[in-house]
Image 1: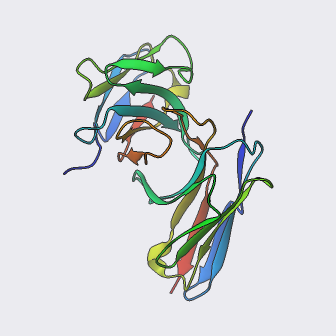
Image 2: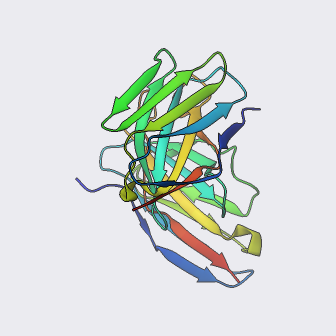
Image 3: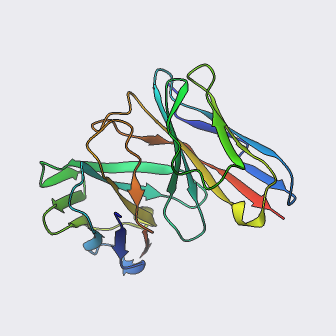
Length: 114
Length: 115
């Protein structure tokens, strides 16, 4: 059974720091991996989607990498800002077929202080 | 156009009551998903619709939970004889065709509290 783990569960950093969030999954047979952001009381906003054949994706200050063979992904946030404070969720799509439900980790709650 | 919307945003009910939660997906999206997120946890899959039919309901916890999508757009998640353990945020997502390349767009969720 596929399990997704995110470390750390919580992280506090001062503004301007670069930081890395970690995601690991137990079964390397994934189709893609997504990183989401969730603000308190809000839904999920997709940040980056990495197909299994890709190694990384970049969007602005965010860079996500994928090492499928080792079951790991990292989300790198450059020059963090207070507005980056949120919970970051990692999710994998475990089967290469339509309608695959995402399997999520528990998330990392990030707090960036000014 | 508008994103995924869900109503109500909050629902408080008493143990044993029946509740309905509504999801309006993005127009034109054929795939619709329901997830449940308990406090401190990631979302967990409940059910997936492709058009009007439930293509995968393997995540529904028991027969008190049921969902419909009669016209292939709006979906309603129905919970009978609610229990305190049903308290959670219920999230709806839609995607264009449900394919592995398709991004899932999430709604804001309905926070259900069972007293």
